[in-house]
Length: 182
Image 1 (cartoon, one colour):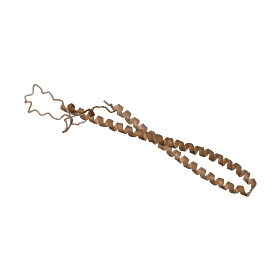
Image 2: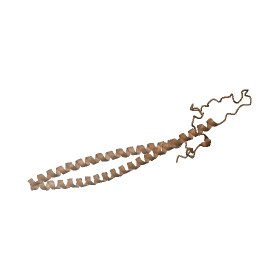
Image 3: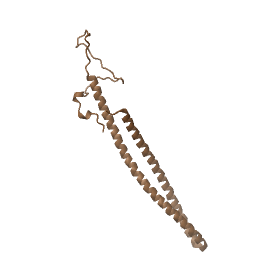
Image 4: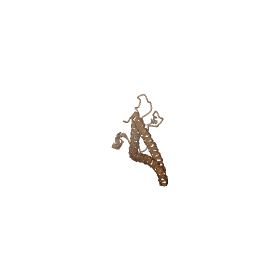
């Protein structure tokens, strides 16, 4: 029989998985934002490079100074390109991991739904057995057994334990009503 602690532990695991997925999505969004910033920086650097090339044609002295600056920008561009490539790789990795977690979340949800269905089935079976138990007649009762009507009993939750029409009796329970949640 599945215990309440097991259901709560399963709920905790699902909540942790959902929180982790949300964290991964935030991290992915942050990486995408940084990628956009890097692309903006690359565009700005490309514009600066074009402007620097224009200026370098006007004077040789300026050309030397701009050459050094161009090399610096190119170095920064290369560094940023490496960082962008790394960020893209990381974003793809995080995206695939998030997809795996989404698949795991669906399996966990299916397991919970299945466990709850089994728990409902077990509860229905138990309520059916409680209602099917005969009430012993007392030897002191002056009334005949035919005249005595049994009132439906209620459990702690206030639910009637009398079987409803169409309830499955414990003798005719099928193997699908067995408590096997895994």
